Every structure is written in structure tokens, then in C-alpha cells.
Amino acid sequence: MFEPPFYLVETETECWKCGKVQTMSALACHLVREEVYDDPAFIKYAEWMPKNLRKEIMDHNPRYGLVKRHTSGRTYYANSCECGASMGDYDLHDPEGPFSPTGDEGLEKIRVNKLGYSEAFRTIADPSWEQVERILEQVSTD
Image 1 (cartoon, one colour):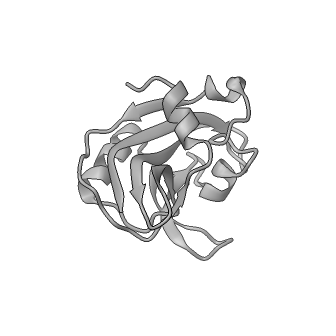
Image 2 (cartoon, rainbow, N blue to C red):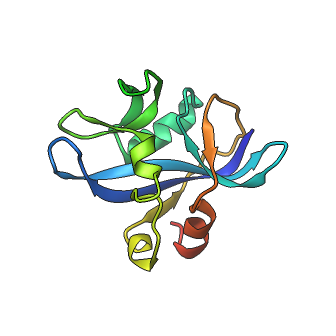
């Protein structure tokens, strides 16, 4: 169960295809209730989101939507570049990706927007606990 508050985490990165710098978004939540963890997390590879949450995210980033990834064969909410290339969660969250900063330099590029959507929901997704707590603690939220 993904529980509020929810955050839209944003940063700039180059598109793998055209090289243009683009705003990339990631969804984070205050709490994931599972058998093992009760911690903040990024919500990666989400196959479904409540309509009002999707709308709020797309108001910030209109190129964040359902994308079919050819590499994994999965369809999930992800970023796309204005050139049409999809930017998968794996590359954005991997150990050297823009949402996994190793130092303060990467943190200063990240913006966090607290979203207004306030209902818990379930979906097929992979929570990721890496770096999100540090990001939410060290980056001021709007």
C-alpha cells in the first residue's frame, strides 16, 4: 500500500536518444506498508495510478505517462523526451542515475514538489528505498 503524502521528484538529465536536456519526474510516497518495510519510497514501474494523481503529475510534467518499454516488455508510467524516446525507470534510478545522487552535487539538481493527492492506493509497482529518504530530508519541499 502506497500512502500519502506523495511527492513529485524532478531533475534535469540528457535524453539518451537526442541529447537534449529534459525534466524527468519520479513519484515518491511518504510510506510503503509492506511486511518488511514501513518507509518512504520511490514508486517505480507503476502500471496503474489513481486518475487524480495522474492528472496532478501531468500538470507538472505532461510527458510523464504510460509507456511500453521495448527492453522489458512492460507498460508502466514513465518519462518521455520531446523527441519521443522513452526514459525508463531503470536508467533514472540506477546507481549512477539522476535520482540516485551519490553526493551533494546531485542533490542540488533535484526539486521536490509535495502533491495534493492524499489517498492511499495499491498498484503493481516496485518500491525503491534507495536514496529517497535522503532526498526528501535534504531537499526542501514546495
